[in-house]
Image (cartoon, rainbow, N blue to C red):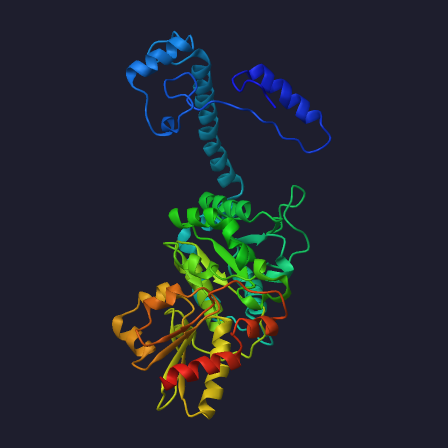
Length: 439
């Protein structure tokens, strides 16, 4: 512990002592806020500018004899160095011209990669991607990523130490390192905030299309960087897996509840929770089409997918399964759409016929015409089902509609056990819908 927080010599000595310590060490430097002023020790100094008289008194107390404004020699030297560095950087522009002459084809590639207009030409190819024999959306995204990588030459990114779980990576023999600049895959380690910050840096510099990945519940760790992506209109892709209470035995720390609505509330951000291939591909089309961050939520839950049109998916929401003489419309996203389809099949046996609507991206669905939204949502009573906090769905619900969401943290157990405990298994959903429908 330093005795006097204003004694730089003592601080230096203590820091040297701490460096020599073989164990983790803490250096405590007690200081007084507003030291030397009339407001010393008072929190008011945080937001109260000193008056001219108070400033003059401070100078006297600290024995500062400089005029009201002056640049010391060291400051002048520092700025002179900045100017010299800037001239060197400008000189590098000539190096680029040399490169252009010496390597014309590579120069053309660099210019093309830095041109934001390039992404539009990849859209049609992405729409044509075909995938077979997958049972989860995380596996589906993995297969799609391998093909997107072949189409989009500057896709680059990695995962926060969970690549084998999120399945959000492009296969590579080696990872990017100081010894390997040819790889387009990063081992970020458990550093979600830094990972997203690095993605922002790559997007700002230009020429690269960065992606990043972690479990949805750990989105909280990278949210400050993601918010900056949105503020700066950066084209980045965040793939969040384990997007439901079915994360299972890892328990409530790994089971997201409030993270999905939190993402949806970030302005200028596309949040997609795809259910099938059309919706996964639509997410990549949005990434290529909009100059803003895209977040894709994928599931580890096994499903049998109901196919749909990418034209419909691109509108953010659409009727996945229409039904004649329907009584109810079931509305959901991602893996919960699979629950809706199972619930609809069973309700049919109870003479309750259901339409099923999938809304992978609420914000893009909301941007559609009123007529389109009305046709999709329909005039029937609606049930919204999603394994996350409930607040957001009330934007689309009417007074008598039923919103079934999660209002508490999850539990540790198998996916089936947790679903039953949280009353989110098919049987519990059926009972709630039947009770509501009778009323």
